[in-house]
Image 1 (cartoon, rainbow, N blue to C red):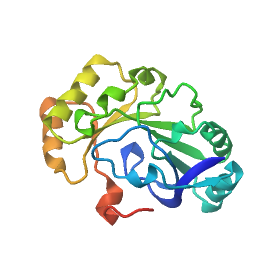
Image 2 (cartoon, helix red, strand yellow):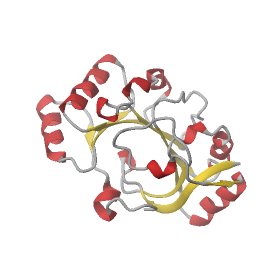
Image 3 (cartoon, one colour):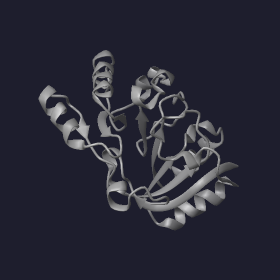
Image 4 (cartoon, rainbow, N blue to C red):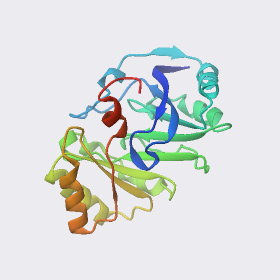
Amino acid sequence: MLKVNEMFPSIQGEGIYIGVPMFFIRLTGCNLRCKWCDTQYAFYEGKDMEIEEIVREADKSGLKWVCLTGGEPLLQKDVYKLIYRLMENHNILIETNGSILIDEVPTEENIVISLDIKTPSSGMHRAMRFENLEYLGEKDFVKFVIADEEDYRYALGILEKYDIKSEVVFQPVWGKDITWLISRVIEDKVNVRVLPQLHKMIWGEKRGV
C-alpha cells in the first residue's frame, strides 16, 4: 500500500530526459521544506492505493517511461515493491531529493536516478547525503536548482569536491532568468547542462501536467 498524491501522463519537464513522454506517479510526503518548492500540495494530500492498482494504471497509460516523484518517493517503504513491479515492463526515472540514502534502489539499466543536491537558497542544503553520489552511475544524473550567485558558487564547490560520474544539470529556479546562468557556465567553462523547466514554460504552474 502506498499513499499517492496524483498520477498522470505528460512529458518530462526537467533533467536529461526533458521532453520524453512519461506516466507520472507522485507519492505523498516529503521530509524537506525547500523555500521555493512547487509541489507543497504533495506534503499531505493523497489516497492509499494498492501496488497492483498503481501498476495497472501505469500499464494502461501505454507509456514506456514511468517517473516516480513526490514529495519524496523514497520515504514510503513499500516504494521498492512498486519499483520492482514497474521495472518488469517500464523504464523508471526516480526523482529523489538527495536527503534519503539510495543504496536500496535497484541498479538495473532501466532504472535512472535523478538526484537533487539542494543549494543554499532552498534552506535545505545541510540535509544532503553526499554518500549518495557513490551509488550513481553514468546513466543517472545530478540536478542543482540555482537561484543566485551564491547557489552557483555552492554548486561549483560541490563539483570540485566530489568525483561525480553522472551527468550534471543546472536548473534555474522558476521565474529566474536563465540567460545569466548560461553566461556564467560558458564563462567558467563548466561541464554541465543548463536546462529550464519545460512543463512550466508550456503550462505554467498548473498541476497534473
